[in-house]
Image (cartoon, rainbow, N blue to C red; front, side, top):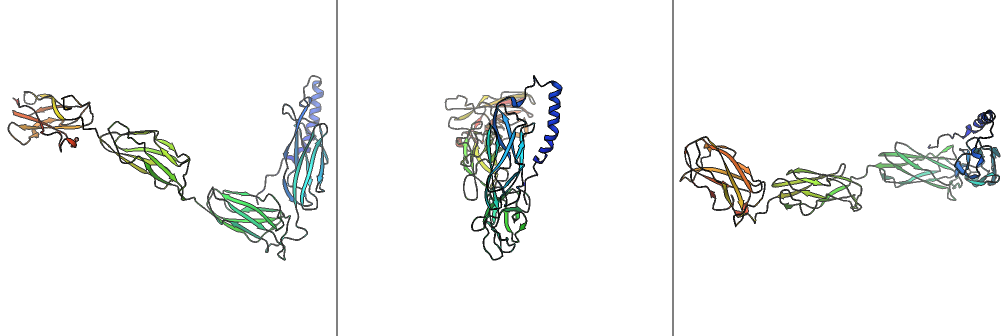
Length: 461
């Protein structure tokens, strides 16, 4: 059975006995004339500290003491003021009927409810200050004894989702003849961990029914039991199955299969949507966007789904030419990761052909020399595209076949601002031509602009 921890207020009489002599000694020791006490300010209010709105059995003491505190305008407790506890409805008793606030301004009393089921009220009154009212509900049962076997406990629904699901627990108290018992106090308890039980706020009604609820943060089967009037445990229990919530689903919303130049953002920032099993948007899901191919970059890589369940990057800038991919990842979400694909390619409309910006010239055998090949437009102006791979080959004069085994150095180079520079040497004497090609401008031909670019004949001695 769930219950609050035992109150501290039973120590109040003892504290008063200990504090008052010490307080009096302090006053005597310092003369008291210049001492400013909290009570020197005008009282501001009486506040209820504990004990209001309890449920109890008719004719029995409540579980928790009634506690009030008297405060001055500065919020300090005021000692040595008499509190009168007056039962105003229900016919119960307060013990003691009068009390005096202790050094911290607290006063307490025990409340025994009246013999009849129903509402009881009591006032704590301080002269020249005011009063506060306590209410309590007394359960009884009209003299009938609750039946362990005829009373019932039920749950609706009997299966709920972890954290979010709530099952209503309905307890019907009956006597041995099956007659409903009104005014009985019902307390619930449940097996397992992570449970949150809401106890019935009122005694059983005219149909003998009291209603509470259960939810839980831990999956499993929960057995819910009920105790009537603090001592009679109903034989029947209700079972509630608490299951893990279905994993939310993540799907690609927009931004797939795009094209942009290397180093440029795609036109549509990629976005995903997260929904539950009913297709409703799920806000608050953390989504991380990670570049997995192409060496691009993402602005706003960490996002949280909004009220529509949507998470969108600020921008995706493509990297190297060719395929680029981006993944959207969310822990515990079905469908993760979502993959976005894009192609990084340079616009080719401006490139018309290749030229030897620095052509090969006569050199000695084994001597190092540089060759530069540029992308140019129809007017011969360099088109400043970077990352376009160009490669060169060596041809004997008059031969249609290359003999690249006589070339040392890197024959494959990427352009920087439209120019690829090659550092080479030729290890065999002869008369040669050099050819430059690219496979990355297919719009201009399978290996670049046609006819292919050949240099003039140069001699290696």
